[in-house]
Length: 352
Ligand SMILES: Nc1ncnc2c1ncn2[C@@H]1O[C@H](COP(=O)(O)OP(=O)(O)OP(=O)(O)O)[C@@H](O)[C@H]1O
Ligand SMILES: [Mg+2]
Image (tube, rainbow, N blue to C red; front, side):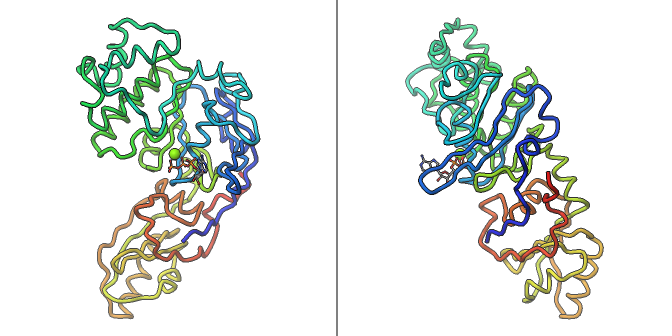
């Protein structure tokens, strides 16, 4: 169930986010893309600061790839303007393409070429004829130094992602775009890719990445734009977005018998609630103590046991939920009922 609860009516300057005016390397204003009747990207505006890791966080179909591809000069917009490093991307994106590095959401690699040969070929596309040692050095940077004479089809999924990041760095780009660099990877491989992205950023490179993993955004990104249905719902440093929710906590629990969702939502200190699998509930509380006390007395009145009680601080998932009325993680958005919010005070409809 999807029920937007917060205004997304931030103007271009507000959407750029605090600090965005500090040496922006990308400026996007009013960017729009339609596919037939579908508005995939809806008048989006933001800036990316030089040297930051900027994340676009959103669920499948939010418009993340479409935005990236318009900035990368691969997909013409229907409206709005984009500048990269002071140059307009459209109508002729060739100059910008020379200055950026791109990892597409899916990369086809040459299975029958050695890794250092693939690096060489990609470099030559930019007129850069790297020596074998230079190709090996780039592979070393992404942790593939021992694979330079191996073949792409011998790499694990995580190693292939690191190779495609190396390919996005081959022209020493001003900005590197990574479209879902860790999707499909196991936690260990994901962390290895995070390390590589962190290294690239420490080398002074601006990185723009998309993800639907809130932990990834929280961990890697200096600032994050939260997207849903083609619009930016919020943009700021992850910690600022989380803090702006106030002293909210999320409480998960299950009950030994049936209780209507409304009764849970009416507990003291509860801002919103939803039913989860297996007689479980998740509530977002502005006052954790009041919520737990009133939950326990509700359980006592109805002669029910409370189990699996888990109280935790807010994270980007909660920011997303408060902005959009639905969860970010599709695997967790299992169609269970979400109750309407009792208040909007913890949303972002404050004119930002
Ligand atoms: N070439 C196309 N023709 C028609 N519709 C498209 C096209 N490309 C994307 N769309 C639609 O535009 C919307 C945004 O797609 P986009 O690929 O930008 O989303 P995304 O946020 O990158 O999603 P994902 O997380 O699944 O990669 C979706 O509804 C998608 O179906
Ligand atoms: Mg995508």
